[in-house]
Image 1 (cartoon, rainbow, N blue to C red):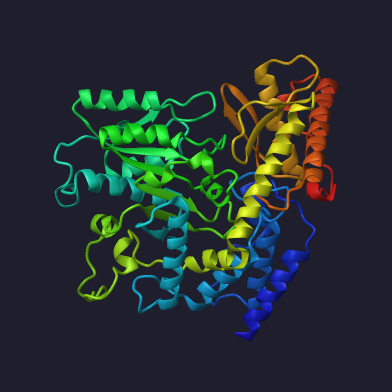
Image 2: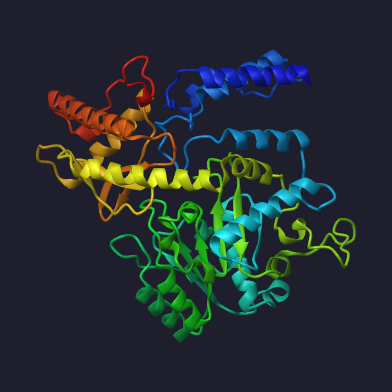
Length: 490
């Protein structure tokens, strides 16, 4: 054990001390040449060889802890959560029953209790799952069981169930419709408004149309924090539609749910306590290591009723004074004690720590939008309600929209090639721009100023290169300067 502890300590020290790019842009073959991932050895490899490969893994993987990492819906690392994750791996605790994971079970139940309180589910229950995709799948399964419990045993028997989500919803909803067998054509993408939010009137019309066709509306999936814009579907207005038609209403808060920590901003989810189920993802804005999804339900009992089956003869030895085993509520059998990393992150930060982080980042988003709108070289091309900012660099020279979109894509690619920043691009309303995700609590005004300045410099350079070569800017791919580092170093 001591030798492995020493290796881990060296890797940690190396990872913390290294001055490296935010990311490396290489082909599969180039990465394969740098790291020996082969498993052809008949006799195994030495610890030194394994340590070298793990060191290369840390050096070459995108560094999500750096300020310049804005590509995904997370950034930064909670070290208390990492500590909890290490302990979970060291113990190899599982979550089938209380007996094999007693403290982990208590920790998970406490995490679920606290999250239910934030949502307003006073009598709720829940479970940690692999991620929001599984949480959304389970929510749809709960809705199906609520309207047609006989399907669990008998199958659909000709029934056509229909689910409704925003046209801006996450793709996991389509996969859930496939897995549950309702069919992708019975997942209706309801129109969204100019701010990327589901239109309640369009939802009402879609449900009425399904009823006229003899189908069974059973599920409405709202999004709290859409992937591109960070938009929040209007909960109260959609709840009125759901209650009028007696349809299960779920809120996918994988990205945007942490706004409930903020007294200043939680009003955007007003009414969420009346929803039937709710998705969280602690591995997004709470910076907990992947994966840490949660499904919450407003009422107790349905999780076990909808998902349980088997295992009573050897695993789930229920007694009259016992709560249901967490394994009976889960689609998974072996389930890792992911609750430790969420619990340690929460224990360290406290409610005030999470609240402060959310308020700070929303303030940074406000300042960033103000900065962009006050700069002649930038245009915010979509509303920014949460921590997503979609904007374009727009040069002073005349360019049509496709050329501007291509230029912004190339700016993102160049910043990744140099290792300065890892930022994605996205499209909305016929325009493609830079999708900035503000998830690292270390972001400050000075960093945002530097980022804008650097994006403008790269844009001007690409245009200059294109003019000299007399080729479209979208086709330019200049060589990044040697030894480039994170934008934070500029």
